[in-house]
Amino acid sequence: METILIEGQNGKSTIIVDERFEEVTKYLPKKKHFIITDKNIEKYYATVFPEAPFFSINPGEPSKQLGYIESIYRWLLENNADRNSFILGIGGGVVCDIAGFVASTYMRGVEFGFVSTSLLSQVDASVGGKNGVDLDGYKNIIGTFTQPRFVLCDTRLLKTLPHEELVNGFAEMVKHALISDIKLFEQLEHDCIALLNLNQPEISKHIAESIRVKASIVTADERESGIRKLLNFGHTWGHAVETLTGISHGKAVSIGMEFACRLSMEKGLISNRDYLRIINLLQSFGLPTCMNIEPSRVFKTLVKDKKRNANSIDFVLLMGIGVPKIETMALEELKKFAE
Ligand code: NAD
Ligand code: ZN
Image (cartoon, rainbow, N blue to C red; front, side):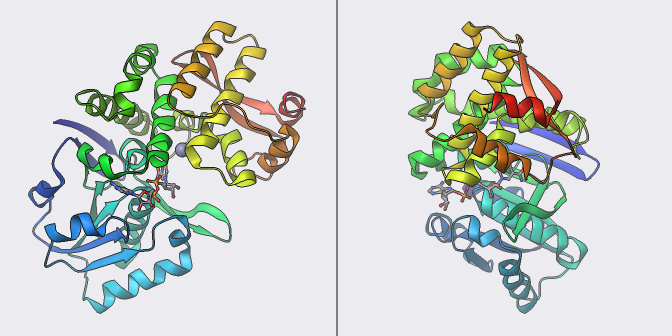
């Protein structure tokens, strides 16, 4: 069992890797508990909390619509939730984002924690205190920075996770290695098959390592004014690909990481050898690195991105494996690469 601490301006969060989810009661404060989960996974976990009121969302991103969230506030009101209540989210990134958002806004904020059940959620979504919901096609546009009191990552839960969802999580794990540490990247190369098979101790070790990367970045820059932007590696291009094609987030980010690495290579920042090594690792995890889609269409979608400055964009490049660089690129320059 490993414990990772995040100390932000918006609270402290303790992330516990490899604790059995049944033990969550040990971490719950003595308060009235309210559980938010989703319909795919409630069957696994409902038995652990027979008395606590449950709200089970329909699985998937559409449940993150702000309008839908109102029904959760009403459920809390009907069940007499007050400032002294505690909200526990049990699920993947969608549940954690919703539970964190609802908890940090209901009655100006009640305490909350997560049992994180998907790989993406364990290494990414439940780490860092960002939560958010969607409005009119804008993802995560309404939200807060508030740290969950605890995040429990029981790696056994990943056994029931569909393979496609597992692969989404591996994309973020490769990203964390690429922006932080060549040794971590080498370990991923070495342990790839074991990770795909969810073998122990490799899966737990790598989940903890990946969380540590994100936790240290978030602790240094909770509100994304500086180095937290590194976490956008592969995402600027990837989000545009996701929007255009509807492919899964992890696959789109993989395509985005290939683009950022190619850009880095063409700018003379990384060698062809490093580029090929990165492509090889992504492919070993079953992630795509190219797609039949016109780059100019991706560029046009990217330009509409809400995070864009007037004529330039902060793009995360690599100067080596594990050595990232935030470069403010003129849109004209990026456009040339996308032709
Ligand atoms: P998700 O929550 O929709 O989970 C994916 C699917 O797997 C769902 O159908 C879910 O029911 C199922 N599932 C989850 N755990 C399972 C288990 N143990 N066994 C069987 N099925 C299981 O999606 P996700 O990929 O976990 O998270 C994506 C969301 O996370 C997005 O909304 C994204 O915006 C958000 N996110 C937030 C942050 C952040 O910093 N707040 C970071 C990254 C992503
Ligand atoms: Zn992502």
